[in-house]
Length: 146
Image (cartoon, rainbow, N blue to C red; front, side, top):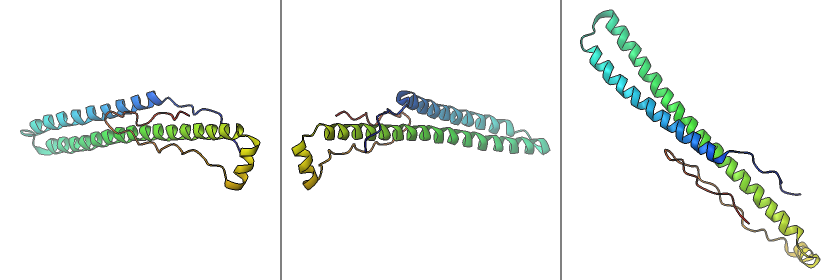
């Protein structure tokens, strides 16, 4: 069995840049929601009756929608960071498999016979990659080098 020789096709820098931008957009939405809430509170002071009740109800729905939109953007940012992590781990596994294949292909006949009796001693596998954290989404790992 041989390791996969194809590289993982993934824009590592672009993914983290997208995650940072999504998180910043969520911050902007949260900021705007706060401003709208302040304006709503000041508008409601002298706004009474049926239209005042409708206004209050609609602004409550808007506040909920803005909160949900901000949370959705944050969830998307974390999902992109998760994709970055998965792609980095897959590429590191492929690089490790290629390294093991290369080691095995360069062994002498005597070493191969010894491996039959004692087993092949694999090099240590790559460490798991940590999930990049907001708001900076800095890379938490690099591709392994052998």
